[in-house]
Image (cartoon, rainbow, N blue to C red):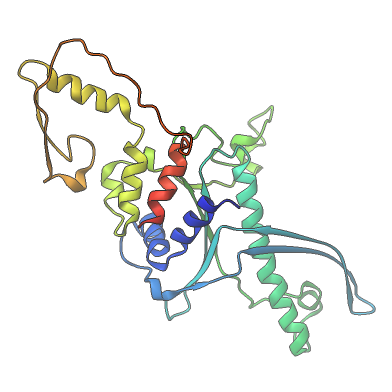
Length: 289
């Protein structure tokens, strides 16, 4: 894992940032999840394939699979309401993302069932339960926590990958489609968000999303400058004019436009400098927040 990936994950792991992004997606920006209600969870998702020998009451492990999430926390609000929350950060398009996230969530559910089954075996509380419950290792009254995973796309290129499991499939007829289970990504792409949506964020993530949305919008900037240079053009701009409604009261004055030709000699940089991709620059800025 590169340093810029570590920096971004550590930023998202901050309780106030993590709570903010889930409040936006789950509760339309309402302050329902408090940072102090979040607890760290192990980011490792384990799937253990076992074979049971019922006569010997023994399990034989056949294979173990491990996958690692970016960030994972559990939310408890003091009542019976609990959620397992995960965030995956992407700076490039992943064309198998629906399957990847589906596997993560399935492994999280399987892990919960395995832990419940281990508790029953350890406490040997199966005497009052039926054969089916004993063989399942999961009793009729047992319950598991819902798992919700968000995918944050910090890339500058448009997301042209699938957003659901069905979008990855090929089938010949529509009659069977209603029987095919789907899995949709909870995908958050700042570049596709309206300013009104970004304003629902309450942490520094709002400024990060604005930067991600407008950092590469050079055509819009070119049009603003061109329009301002025309006779009678609008030369006093607000934050809203340039696409940042949170800076509506700020003003930028453009003046002294010229139609004369000019030439510019490129600056020669020392070899000690290197070109930094926009995605890496964004992660550097995130590290300063």
